[in-house]
Structure formats: structure tokens, C-alpha cells
Length: 214
Image (cartoon, rainbow, N blue to C red):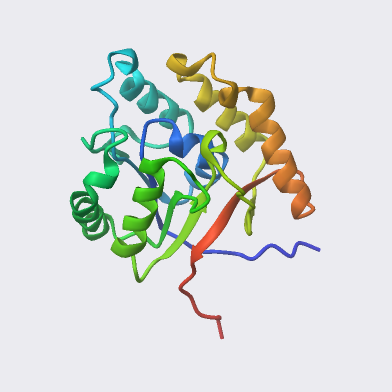
């Protein structure tokens, strides 16, 4: 018997601090949702002030395309990496604009268990900007501290493979341990084991706004 809770969302907004964050935390889910929902991915810093990261914007477009996200739905901000805490008000105003323009049914942002100063700031401001919207937190393993998923979404083996392929589009990060296909698959298997499924993407619940069908 399939006991999955069926959720309906026509518009889903994914928010990340830097290129690669969204795919690391949500790549399998995006692959799963993209055929049936309007996906918008917002990255607040394009990292172009770092000369070693000059290709990451192009790589994120390629990565998102592999997940089924149109280039027009991949949006970059110009906030400076590692300085987000000094730009809180500007980030809040930017996210409010995203809310008005895209009217998302559900928002995914960094977990509150994330230690990175930029990730933490984005999550706090997103919770302010999207007060009337369900918000879930995703894990970026390199900066997580005590993350444990409380919202598990079943995904398919094809979604797992698409997530791995999307991360491989980041040639800039090819030597990073957290881009390892084995690690990516292991996390999805572990999340699946937590909910007795083969694979699952895991999130924490930051806010749920809903009602029971009658």
C-alpha cells in the first residue's frame, strides 16, 4: 500500500546562496517535479568576484538544464559571498520581489542546521519574506550541523541519476568530495531507508501552511 502524502504545487521556488547549493540539496526533487510544476531557481550570489569561479554561472545553467529547468527560470542575484549578514535588508527586499513576481506555492531554502553564514542569512530572510507560504529546508552536507530530515520525498532512480549528472556539470568543483556520485547516491539511499523507500530527498520542515481536503 502506498502511504505517500500527495502534495500539490504548481509553482515551486528554490532559493540558494551560491551556485551549486540548490542542486546539492534538491537536485533529485527538481528532476522529479520539473515535468509537472513550474520551477524557479534563485541563486543570490553569482560568485563572480572570485576569479577562480568564473565558470560557475554557465555551469549552473547547464546543471539546471539537466534537471529540466529552463534557463529563463534560473535567476542570479549580485550579493557578495560571505557578506550576506551585512546585506540582510537588501536580501529581504530581493526575496519579497521574488515572492511578488513568482507567487510560489512552496519554497525550498537552506536548512536552519546549516553553519555557513550566507546560507543561514538566506534562510532567516526567506522565512520573513514568505510568511504565508510553506517553507522547507534542504541540506548542503559540507556545511551542515546536526541536520536530520523530517520531510522525506520519494524520488526515482532516474531522478537520482539526473542529480548526479547535474552535479557533474560543475567542472569547477570536480575535485570536491561533496560532489562525489557515491556520496550523493548514498545520501538518497539513506533518506529512503528512513522512510522505507528506495530513494528519497530529505528536508526539514520550517513552516507548513495548509488545510485538510474535505
